[in-house]
Image (cartoon, rainbow over all chains, first blue to last red; front, side, top):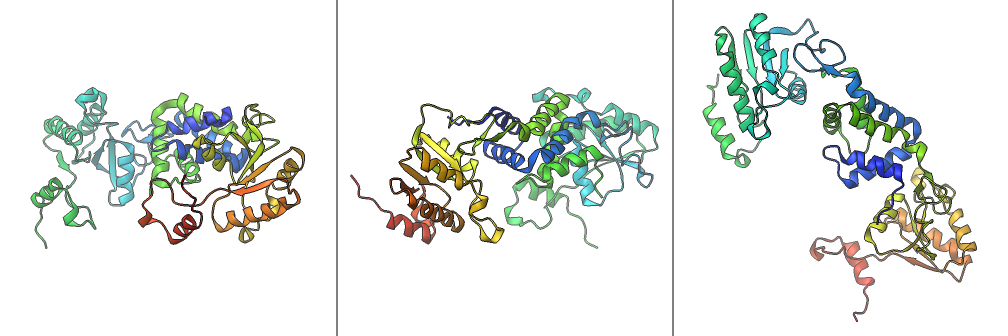
Length: 201
Length: 201
C-alpha cells in the first residue's frame, strides 16, 4: 500500500534493523537525512561504513580501539594493579561515566549463557587469567550485572581465580539505587540492600 | 572523561545529530554496528550516503521520487480530479497508510510561519494553483494539521483558490480520535467535535 521510492525504502529498512528503531522512527530518520542534504548524508554514511574496519579490540583488555592498546590501557596514570571485569564495552563506558574508577578493565564480550550456548571458552576469560598470572594484580572487581547470567559468570571467574590466592576478588555492591523510593524497589533488591548493610561512621 | 576511539566518537556524534537520538541511543547504535560487522555497516552506510543524490521531488506533486513522477502521480488507477494538499511527505504517507484515499496529493514542503520567516512564496503553492488551473480539478482537500500554522496555511490556500469557482475546497474533519476517551480530550477538540457533528443515518 505504502509506496516509497526504492532508495528511500532501502534506507528505512536498514534503519529498522538497528535496535530500538521501529518503522516510524526509521521513516523520520530517512526523511531527516533527505532534508539535510548530500553532504550531511555522506558524513553519516561514511562514518558508519568504515566503523568496523577502523575499530578493533585492545590487545590487553578487549575494549574498542583504533590502536593496539585502548586509551585506558595506554594511559600511564591508570592503576594497573586492579582490573574491573565487565561483560560489554557499554558497561565499561557506564563505569567511566561515574568518574570513580581510575584503574583498568577487562571486557569479557558476553556472559555465560547455557541457553544461548555461550560457555567460558566463548568469553575473554583466558586472557584475564593470563593478565592476573603475569602482572602483579592485587584486586579483580567482578562488575557483571546482578542477573542470573551475570552472577553465574562472576562466580565462574571467582573460582578460576582461586589459583591466585594473592589476588583479592570483589563483587560490585548491590543495593538501592541512589534517589530511589524504597517503596518502589523489588523484594530482591531490598533483601540485598539489607544483607549488604554497612556500619555508619 | 569518556574516552571513545576517534572513529567511534565520530559515529556517535553523527548519530546524535539525528532527531530523537540522544547520547545513550547513539552509543547503543554505534556498538550495534560494530558488532554487526563490516558488511552490514557498509550496507547501512552506503544506503544513507547516496540517499539525497538518488531521491528527488515529483515534478507534479513534490512527493519524494527516483523518477520524474512519483509512484502515486504515475499510477493510472489514481483519480486525478482530486488533490489532497499536505505539509510534508510524512503526512502524505500517513494518509496513504489509512488506505482510504485513491486520488493525488500536493506537498507544500512546509506551512506558513511568520515567526520562522516562511511565507507563501517558500511553499509549493504556485505549482498547486497551476495544477488547479490546468487539469480539470474538481476538489482540493486541505489536509494541513489543525494547528495555528496549519489552519493559516489552509485559509491562505482557500483564498487563493477562490479564483477557480468550479473547484470545491474542503478541509479534513476535526473531532475525537477513534478509540479516545471523551474525558481525556482537550476542550478545543471537544468543541470542534461538537460543532462538526453529523446526522446519523
